[in-house]
Length: 409
Image (cartoon, rainbow, N blue to C red; front, side):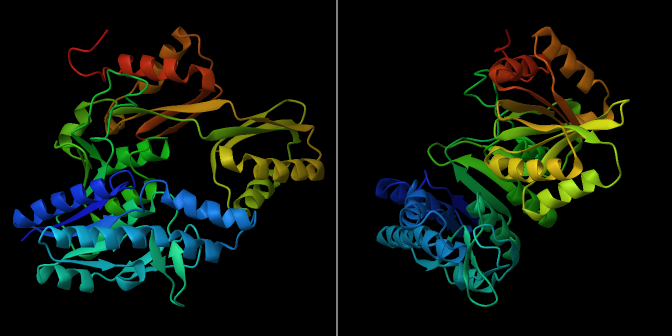
């Protein structure tokens, strides 16, 4: 008997009608001879509603209590889905995060999974039940309820699949797979049947919204086969798997973009040892992630230091940088939140040269200035002015031949 873990997001369980639809899908999978466990999110909009209630009381609610509040969204969904499965004649049993358990650290609102106990879920499957598991939540060694942060339900599903040694983890969402780029920007985008963990990890970190990086990292670490599918229609979707030989035939697999970044520049910093360490050490202590970094050394004994952070972190980052600028004698601090990072991704880059040059030439032909550049073994990223996002994505999608056959031009 194959074991399948299915995960349904907020839109997939956003109403009673949709919960009943999920119940039918889950039962159909079980009736096909598979063991099934289901991981669900809170109903669409529910987590934001719950957090909003807490923020009506105070601007800065205690993170521990916020997790207690937020975790109730998934508790409602698992109960409702279990009832819907039972109504259709199936056997179902709901599990809160602490009942599985998902053991986490105590970083409230963004806890990290340390281990997952799959024995209770496996036993329920063997007894003919469909375990309905709350995603997004866990428990510390001290018994505190935690939540896993953005994309936490996907992470819960992949982690559970690893724990119960599932044959596949199916991620059901409101899209039917991973595309070569955002179809809302480029109608010629096509669904990718199979994508490597590495490529999906880069795409997720670079703005693709289908899956979060932590889920893909977990899947890659434990060899969990992930299948992204639509909740609302039948279809093959996209498999996220280990790199396969055929994947190298494509030079570029996808074009991604991320509008959630901002640029910070420390102008005319004294060119002395230790300043960069002081700056980025302080930013790191504030739990702010830095992405791209560029340092330009001038002949006058000073340097301009530019880096990018998440747009939501810009106010805090600016405060930190302005304080350090005064301490080290920098001339000024400049910020820009009207930027976008556009990236070309593909494992084919490992064995082929020229992707960066082709990307830079294409952007230049469109009159798009490149502000920053970052590369890895399988990606090239450029920071450009946000107003050129759609133009850049379409141009790169075309030049790398990613369009659906028959849709070029």
